[in-house]
Length: 96
Image (cartoon, rainbow, N blue to C red; front, side, top):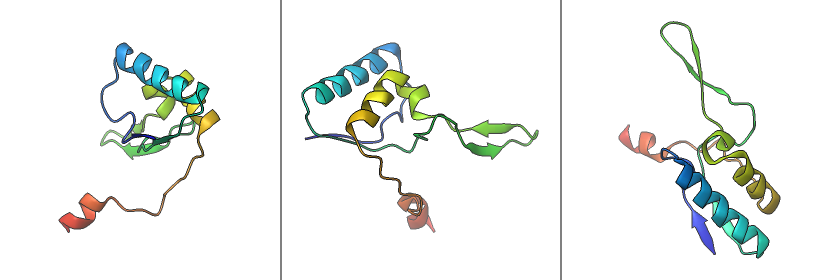
């Protein structure tokens, strides 16, 4: 079992993108289990994260933009997406 926590949360270089794609492809091809968590939008159309002071809409990056379309495609081939929209960030909750 491999768990990749917070996939795409760091700055992604070409090397990181290639490595993530390689790991996901290997696990997919060999039918090995993989759990990946992310805060990124898994849909191709990014949602608006916020509107800046100048009125410009700022969009959240999508998973495909960060890890690459190929790795995202493999993840969707081998994994089931479990959305957790009602879950509040525990760090924000604890700070209150």
